[in-house]
Length: 209
Length: 80
Image 1 (spheres, rainbow over the protein chains, first blue to last red):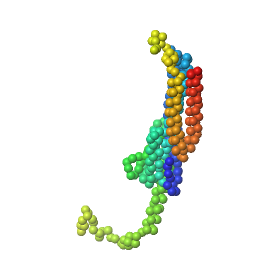
Image 2: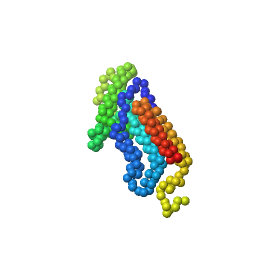
Image 3: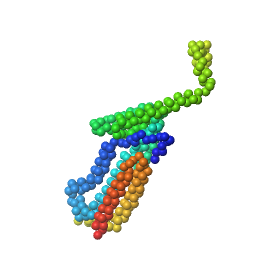
Image 4: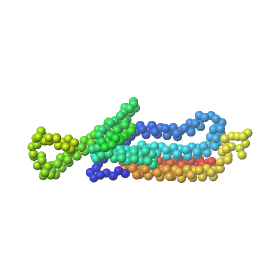
């Protein structure tokens, strides 16, 4: 569960593209039909003996097998569906569902974003608008990455727009603080006209005339 | 003992007692129950940002019930 701060609102929830889950579930489907296809096309006497004479047992075992395939398909679905990016007006929250029991939630303030980069590789990715989004932070060398995101260009626009709004807000607050909380001594210094050419140059903490 | 001279796959099955299969089915039931709880826990915990989770839960439960009932029917037929 992501706890939102005061006045924080969710702008967009970004997920992986549907093609990602379809390709994953295709392999699960292959797993499901593989034993049936094997038994039909494998014309061995042993298998015919088992299937035809004991079809109840065969179907029972096949149903048990399908139960596990059904569980696997939902684990795949959870890994897809709960792997999200939440873009708010203050930050970017990355929820990375690695496995069923492993989950990583990281948060990045929008003002710390240094660069947003997208990469779209391949024919299918170009046509279906699938791409990886890399968000580089100012503080560390680490990157926020969402793989196979849906419509990466749109997501990039939203992030940049939210970043712009946040930066503008921060600038306004900074200017307001400077105007209202300026210390009196600072005013005196500012009002003085200082001739730079008459000032001594400071090098290595020693005054050189 | 299985006689190698007159071996057939179905003769192995003759050695399988339905009681063992029911025990196996019970173990499967326990494993499935645990995994179902885990999956439903995940689906319930993060449902705020995932509107399809309710539908997913219904589909998961329905599919699981159908498969389980089918397995039980085939096991009963085998046991008879």
